[in-house]
Image 1 (cartoon, chains in turn blue, green):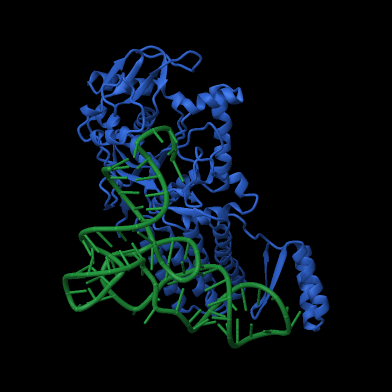
Image 2 (tube, helix red, strand yellow):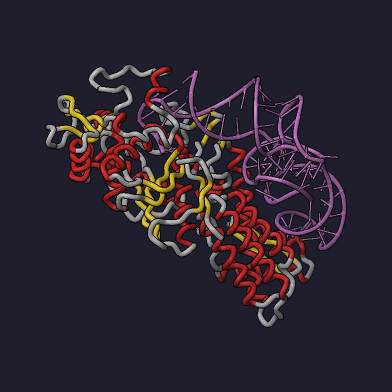
Length: 464
RNA sequence: GGCGGCGUGGCCGAGAGGCGAGGCAAGGGACUGCAAAUCCCCGUACCCCGGUUCGAAUCCGGGCGCCGCCUCCA
């Protein structure tokens, strides 16, 4: 079955086929590292982490690049406020980024390039644009001439002429056209600067992504992803710069995620309505947060609320419960006969999971497939099936969870000898019908984080 | 003003012309010493108004409401 993805460029769901057979070059717009990120930022990183994991699970070799923007106005301002050098500030918040990314199970990209480490590439790109007449100089600044790029606006539907009507920004008089944007900004006193053929300065915002993406992934990317707020002007400008310099399509498939809202409004640093991963993990498990993030389709808006996180935690527990049960079942399954029905259930669940993911990475539908499997597992939990089948079920559930970055951590582990002995004591108490003693032991274990469930198939336990 | 998106049962959230995804909650039942878990049953939902169609939540037209982008932004 073909994988289909909604391409922002054109707006249609298209069959996804990488340029080179079996290999995918993927670029994700990373954060500006001038402060701690918020969960809204991480929605994007989690969403595209799922995309990369899924692509890999289909056997594609994915090269994922995610940058760190480590020089811009906000960085410079934050340096002054924190009294840190640009590099130290970046180091500090890159570390914070990785701390949170690790908590949420966002895998490392293959390359995490930094803008300040790619000045030669950026300057080269600027020079090419200048040579080709796509850019012009104004004193120490370099601007991209939008009217020279005929398909400008194809991604966002924003064309330079249309924008003027409602322009709220004061037009920089030095630009030839109000829609032109800076490729290079001449140094101002006290600002970090690098040497260039046009004098000291620093790169404009958009140019770094073009330069780094093309350096690591070639002139045509398979996937370029980021938040919906980046469509215009950032990604529009990236296309213009890159294609004006190479003459070939910059990217075949553009993926954009919807925003995380707080009380109906986009969570954003400038609005100040942000929640950090750090704050959230004081109240919820990281995996619960991740579950919440993948419980809606990546392109749809998603509203944060404590209730939503609460629900996510319970739903995740249901998934985990089934997995634990399967593990217990392995002990009882030895020597049992195979039953064809459950095998079919596994195949059916796998098929609907795949179908969901192939349809534009539909994670909520994929979760539904997992819950369908979970119900079947729970129904059959004490029925006859072979150990092989039980293992297969466990593997299937784990694989499904793994692609979403779920069901990984919090392995229940083994019951310590001490606890196992207590469980045995309670079992004999129950056989004596000494309920008081049985309940006492159960309470004691609960106090120490071990919860028991009496079932027809025997005692089960879980941590919690 | 321009561009884009959204409006589904108590809540969340898929679907996109024809047997009412899935999760959470509520109710009923089974199981059970208790607890927990689990299972079964239980909902005639698609913002409004027109239209197309044998049939529309899904397509078309017109409204209303909300959000995003057009300025830094995942």
